[in-house]
Image (cartoon, rainbow, N blue to C red; front, side, top):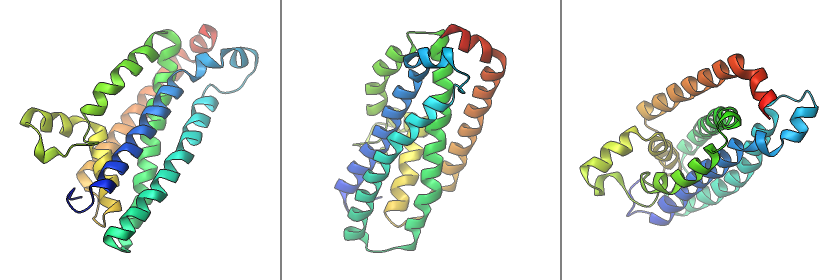
Length: 200
């Protein structure tokens, strides 16, 4: 997306994606500890509460996306590539889901993890091209942006909104990360599942 064409859309789409990521991951990370009384007294799966939080935050993200689509329509008109938003948003949900589930399990063992995540989020915000563009920052920040998965998520989300085909390399990178995160989560859940519930 060229920022000169519609910087409000560039900015708002970046804020929408990052806010969804931040809110869902922070809340999911502490969800097991926050509801430990219920989980310790019932056989409910420990994944229920993190996933519930993801979908509750996802509703807000969908509302933001509708607004972004409206901005896109007034700037670029109707374009069939807006349909790319569907697989892109599925990837965004899966990425947040996997990371949130992983952190919620780890947080039961390391109780200060939520505070560390909250402290890290402002730094991550400025290391992600939410308000700035990759081609207008120093070279070292461009390298950070390449490694930052949120940069790729924002890139494919903005591309779909602005009538362009999302970058397939970025999508492949996100899919690979999602697979790795879920594999790590399932490994921890299998090895420490009972210990996690006992630690609540």
